[in-house]
Length: 83
Length: 235
Image 1 (spheres, chains in turn orange, purple):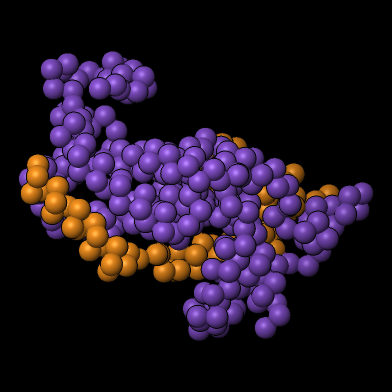
Image 2: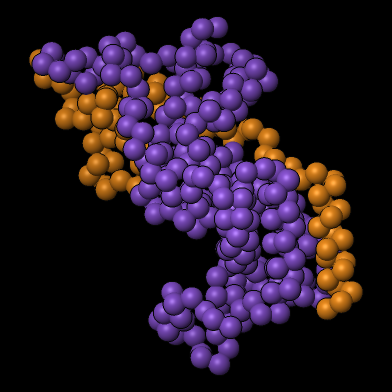
């Protein structure tokens, strides 16, 4: 029996970033979507990737310390006084 | 005062009237910010400092080895920004201009520290890491029917309890997975997915081509997904 599409799952997982970044030709995107339409394994994989991005986006970004902010604001006030 | 060649060609190719190119090319939001800074509005300065701090720290740490030196670099950057404001003509966005100043100062400090590994070789290392996104054993081998298709389908994360996915334990695990990536991959995924920069911004900040940026992002995301999958499979 022939594989269902010309794109294999092993190839698809390497194209996921191009897909999510919208960096595919319309033909490649169609092949990708066609494969997803009939492959639950790859649909699960895409969900995993999306969840990974959501989780990374929920990490707290580094915030500035009060001390550093004070130093920068002092720089600003000095500059303003002398400009 | 010198302008970069690409800036010149950019202005040459636009239909802006030659007399007021500088002001015309300023993005309206940038124009407001620059005007506020020039008149000494501290709230605007505080907002920019807070908003860009995480990304500035990331970028500075590519060139210098400690957070102390990075903090010094950021401090000098803001001083350079304030002193250069009068000359800022809006040939690039305010953000790109600030980060270009940051990179120049960080490079000077980095050269002084004689850091052994330049970022360009970290990029090379990050690109040439040819570990596949998913282990080959997860796919049916060549020569067999359905070669290249899943042996068994990936775990369905949608069925995981929401509270598990939102737990601090998983968050720590994602953070650790990102920390342990090769440096160039770590920089790209942190700027893109944690700090929310666009791909165009990351290319400018890290001096990467669009294609290389995407390859590094792909490797990074694939590894973090894999680390999470292993972790969730253990639980």
